[in-house]
Length: 98
Image 1 (tube, rainbow, N blue to C red):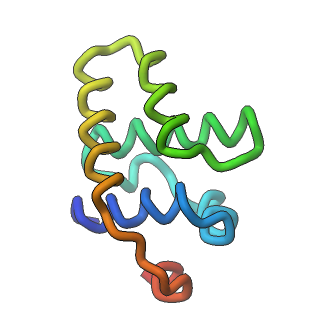
Image 2 (tube, one colour; image 1 turned 180 degrees about the horizontal axis):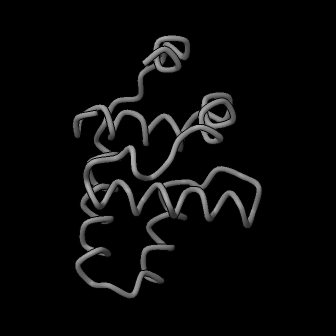
């Protein structure tokens, strides 16, 4: 999985509840190569575990402040910036197949 696909995947996770519901049970943070994306995925899963809803990018930005490691925090912020600029793939079946 390359960085671009990771951003597309994370974007879809935070913007499409149907996609989220289908892939969240099978995705693991280890599937992401970049540490910022791994940690961001953990934040998404933790948020969902606590609130039973998909976090918005704003809620994720707010959650980053709770990450104690400054380097990890910076990587997550970088990932969030990339995701916010990434266009969402509209074809749900294509994303599920990928």
